[in-house]
Length: 329
Image (tube, rainbow, N blue to C red):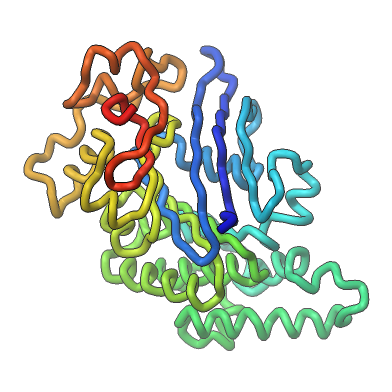
């Protein structure tokens, strides 16, 4: 089966006052239609940069040095800014941001913000022979109300006339999920959308996302730092460390038998498994000064002399996962 999204050998650098910072270095992942792929890693490992590279919204000074981002048979890195805006963002790839309060403008009603997206990116937005302006807007309002009802937003008929501060945190997150689905995209990218929510609301949002993937036939790229969320929601997993993919495969196989030392260390930090409060010794290496050899070697409990001199290639582990470690090379 051809994946909906395939990132191959992606390398991204950002120019800084201290030199070029290698944020991503050989990241690869694949997401099949109708599945949920979790991307896991500590802060500073490049998860947000990966999302920005896929959507073509890298910050000024950032460059893609090599690699490909294939989406539905097209390399997005070959698209111009205008083509990404016109053909990809919102219309084919939806986005759920991390902070629902910052993502919504507090001075505009929720409906005006969501309808503006649909005005430019809905499937009928570029249909010259379609409905007229007023009729089209009514159709968009009807779709939004239907989505809000499906998201279990209270009183969806009047919700569009309210301001963001009139909703709770969980309700605002449901609004953003509805906005991401409003233009019927094939792929939705979620950037840690449950981080700011309480445990009960987080569980409800995760159940809702799982139902929506099956109901709308979309693919979901879910970025998180929480293995509990991964276990509850995702089908497949990609573990990123210091801008590199270090392990990827089926979630259940990796959770039962993690192969890379970093994956094992992350799992050992989860509250359900942790035996101490120490976490992983050390910190993610600076993108301005990557160590020679394996990037995880300075923090690895299983380090060998070879690890400090050789950059390990990806190899197949017994669980079926692809692992970047000299133990499997």
